[in-house]
Length: 508
Image 1 (cartoon, rainbow, N blue to C red):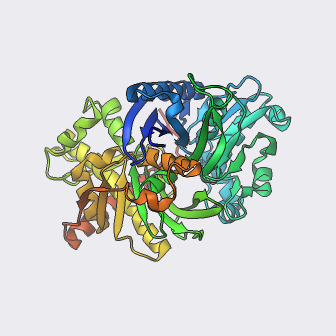
Image 2: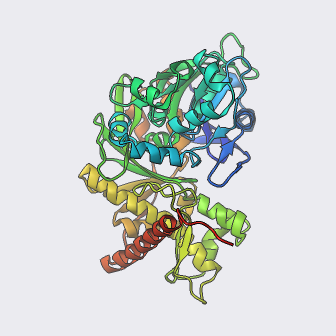
């Protein structure tokens, strides 16, 4: 396969990307297209699924052209995707019946509160490893079936298909021949039993979801079907051989394949994940137990802490506050001050994720003085990414019972050395950035390549991971404690503000 390559599709929250990977794990071309974010109401976030497909399809052609490759030189396709985002489409027309409801969307938060009051939390956590939250797909799917006229009747007849973005892409790539997902994505729906490895009948009944709408669940590394691309003989096609949710893909791409290894991805949100091997550890600290991947019949599990707003806080500085023109400017702006001068920004624009899980908290800035300026706010915004990660790591240490001594990091924000150093200081552990930070795409590529023999086994992949930079803790325990204490005060205040105003009537 010396003249063969793997095509990785990395469909994210704000853009669709295609990357071509060689046998050494080197990325030889990348194509990326952003797509529109829709906010029809406060707390609602939607995508046009047809636009997602068109942008993803466009980047495939562009990546091949940049690399000067013919589609026949692609040995397999791996797909990784934003998780939980929910698409329902008509099997006949192939078009969605409603805009995709994005993982950040909070429209079902009140319904989730009702489920908690009904005492459903323990049962759902035991079966799925998840906490009841609007974040996951189940309540989004129920909302679409309830709100779109005629949808539930069509779903019961088998005329509709539900999927997370991986399912939507594979449906389109195979021209409607394959309706499937993998265990990692299924485990994020709040409908899948992660111990019995099947859609759970009790949960389908609870959410009133017809089984006929669901995709088939497969392993993370196998041939699911053939993609029909321009320039490829339709009778053969290219094997689609890897499916995996984006955070699990990053864990695999970082080659955290042994129990106890952990990574943190700094993207739109922030996602820390620890491999716990073939054992599912139930969290006592509001983390999620999830399926990492399944290869050759072996299922690996992980503990995960999800932070909803990480890199998106920089987009907010750019698009809403307009204190920077490009996201790349934030590091220089923040570097104009030694620290935030007591300013704390809690970016709870879509509520707070792990370990707080408060959907009603809202973004807040505390500690402002007359001397606070744009640089202090920019620094506080970057600091908030590291602070939220520190909260997750503390919970993960408690659940796993093993202190994390090394954290492998990836994602766009890791190019910011000051942020990575601050992260190491807060965590009091080594932070390692690899040479290739496109670990999400690599994870999908590796899983696809393993399925078709492009790589022989995991051992053959280990040499692909190489360290770029290492950050060691450089602050005192007193400095760390003071910084975290201030952050926790700000988080408590943000939550208290939301609680105190939730039942107030606005008078004019």
